[in-house]
Length: 106
Image (cartoon, rainbow, N blue to C red; front, side):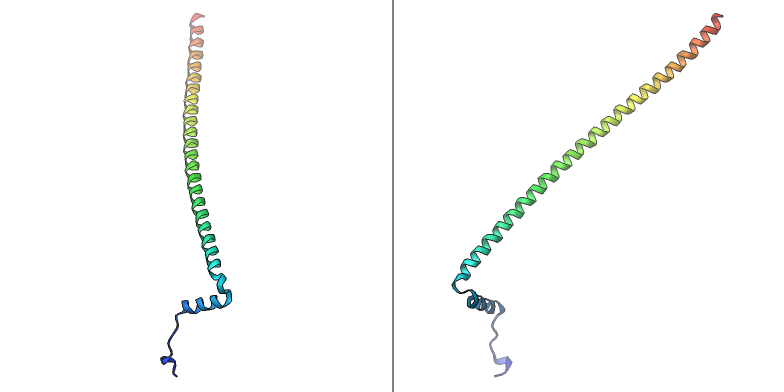
């Protein structure tokens, strides 16, 4: 017989036949256990993805809060510096006026 006249068996059927020879009747039990493991892994993966998404949301919220607090602190510090600068200027002006007044009183 030539190669063209031979009926070709699909690879999947060959693998199934090999599995049957090696594992025999236990193959269904193994397949069931593998399916359960695969389902369990998928469940864990979904759970991990949800946990990471929640952690990411919390982290982003904390970053926003921290950014707002820093911006607020910067505004408060700027206001305090401006007040201090104004106070210093007022003290210098008052000092100059007192010196001028003292000169006039002489």
